[in-house]
Amino acid sequence: MTTGTAATAATATDAPGRSFRPLAGVLTAMAVSVTGTRVSAIALPWFVLATTGSATMTGLVAFAEMAPYVAVKALTGPLVDRLGPRVVSWTTDAVSAVAAGLVPLLHAQGLLPFWVLLVMVAVIGAMRGPGDLAKSVMVPEAADHARVPMERATGLSGVTERLASTIGPAVGGGLVALMGPLAGLAINAVTFALGSLIIAVALPRGMGRPAVPATAADPAADPAVDASGEEQPAGYWRMFREGFTFLRSEPLLLTVIVMIGITNLIDAGFITVLVPVWARESGNGPAAIGLLAASMGATAVVGSLIAAAVASRLPRRTVFFTGFLLCGAPRFMVLALGAPMWLVITVFAIGGFGSGFLNPILGAVLFERVPRHLLGRVHALGDSLAWAGIPLGGLVAGAAVATVGLIPSLIAAGALYFATTTLAGLRPEWREMDRLRGRSGRADSVAGASGVVGAADAAVEPEPARSA
Image (cartoon, rainbow, N blue to C red):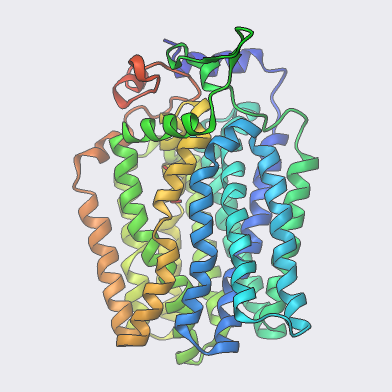
């Protein structure tokens, strides 16, 4: 059995030299993509609220984007492994740029009925899913080139995401307040095009190639053989099944996915409906949305930087649930209580700091536990299951506001968030978080006739589905 430590050492020996260019390229593409998405996250709900005045229709638009995102992403894992994450990333970003650019153009011509907007948003969501997956899958390869620990690479990825999540809302809130929501949607199209260009042109040659087929990496996988007697790559559904089988064998990853799935559903309703409705009813307007997101994002950058530097020496379980305690229920309650703006900003800033530690830990757990040739499939399934509630978040929040009002909806959502993150921490699977740390999932270990690596096999050597 090839161990993760041995595989990492082999990479360091065989590599032509240490290079930070791949990691810088992937992180830059992530930064551009996330910035545009965060701008759109303010501009699109405000555009719908301004043109329809309906919280329910605002939630429907969020559903139209996120349902295809989750569904397509779940099915894309084998394609990312087969075609290579680089090709998938730049092509999907290019299609997203076209769809995003059509929204302001069609509206300016009076050719954007609500159903057309839903179609455009659905196309963007369907393309964003595999595009985001492909960029994330390239992080371990980029870390190998740079020869940095996996937790540091995922920490830098978290810093990049948080920094973009700070800049994006600030830009989006300012643009919407000064120039209207369509300006923010236009910026989103530009960032998709730029991200596509970075991945297609700026990364070094050979980066993001297709993964080694499971049949070549795993002698227990019973490879298909053609008429000439030559080994053939596994088919799409077989590759999909291998990813599902592996994920099912990992209790920690499944527990993470369930908890993150619930919190993601609540957060989706909070971001797409509850906060915009609060901003409108309180009279603070779209600039306040950007200010809150920027304050939370700025402190999240600090948290992610600290996580990148010291997370490998901290107890993961304690840090993880402390981060959720800070970034969860307090945000909902401070809005429900009608607190002054300075207090709201303070609570969001503290929550941002706690949230900065989450994704670096989750990313490290995923990449440690999943063999490289299965990474696209397992990552896609894990993310999609964790994000499955997001399309419903806006619909549920919109219906709740329409039925019982904003304040009761905020209180109920905050209470559910607290219960989910507190009770989940009592389960025994979380003790596995600090086991296997520091090992690479790049090794293609074999676990019996099934040809997958389970928790018991991975334990011979001692990261999350990203919160997805």
